[in-house]
Image (cartoon, rainbow, N blue to C red; front, top):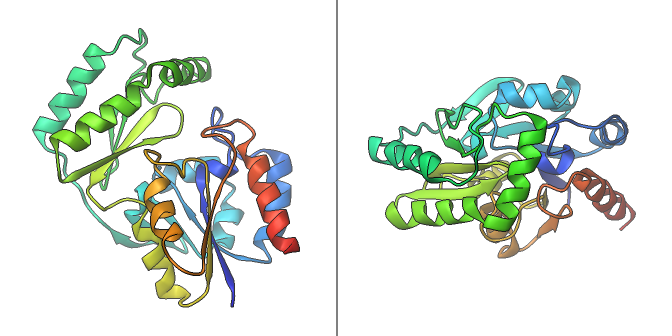
Length: 246
């Protein structure tokens, strides 16, 4: 039985700088040459290509973008699940930006990625310092968790999960990372499947995939350190080294 690995992108990057460190890249590039793996991220392909060396993307069997709503094979789009947000949802998000007690608004607060919305109070154009400051604020205030709960309560056809350090991923109900496993099985059926992510707990954007894998045979889920930890990639490396030894 082959081992098929699925990585949430955040478990391989430094969350603040959104990049792969040289030491982890050296380790992972060697590992990637010897294993079967897929990558999954809430970002679009263009953003992922800024974060991960292209040769590593090329070594993967596929890259799931926009929370699993797009699949790229050899840099070609294999499928795309479109999502058009309602004006009511957009108005709600704009009102939340106004209501938030966090003082900074850096721009790019509602990013439409075609198959999902990425929402951020501080805005995706924030500086590194602002990103870290908002993350600290959110850990204390639980602002993102509160907004996500409001969304899934108001709209029974939507999912909203916390992603990264500053944002919320919004998709049609069920159109989240949970769909990744069934797609992977189209390429490799009846194998052993291993998922590594940094937000596998309830409310995190890795949870939908982690939940179904925890309920299925021949599946394992590993949490790569604390959510959005700067050194979470080290936990990913440790997990991979231990799995290689087993």
